[in-house]
Image (tube, rainbow, N blue to C red):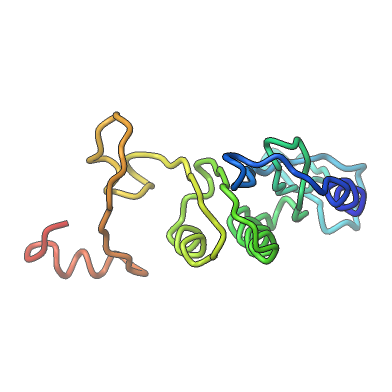
Amino acid sequence: KEIMAELSQANNAPQLLDDKYLVVAIDGSDFDQPFNPKSENVVQTKDGRTYCQIHVNALYDVLNKLYLDMVIQPRQKMDEREAALTMLKNLDKQEKNFLVLMDRGYSSFNLIETCNRLKHCHYVIRTKAGNGAIKEITTLSGHEYDSELSCKVTASHRYYITHKDTEKF
């Protein structure tokens, strides 16, 4: 991580999109480690295999081909969304506009709202349509356009069960 930080600091004139936006992407990958039975990174599979593995969440500068930040987690305790929040908040402190690209695993109301509140953050999050996704996306056509979505956010399905007959969802 220290070597990555040194390399990214050396690039003092980064290439920007439209001379304004740093373009970054966030994703995670698993890496095997030499086996150590005392490691916090031990993973036990259902079929009884045991190995050591970490999950690396990386923030990558797409135009300059540099890794800017990373969060390393034990595979058993990985939380890609929390890692993304940490890296985005760190990047926002640099007070430069950035556009972040994230894949389906990052779609969450908390991450979206955090991105909305970060002063320099602009974002694109790919998400699933249908079950397990933001329900309102299923009504969108397959064409490119901008659209405001309005949806209710609750901590449980109780609101829906209580109001499904009286409210349009």
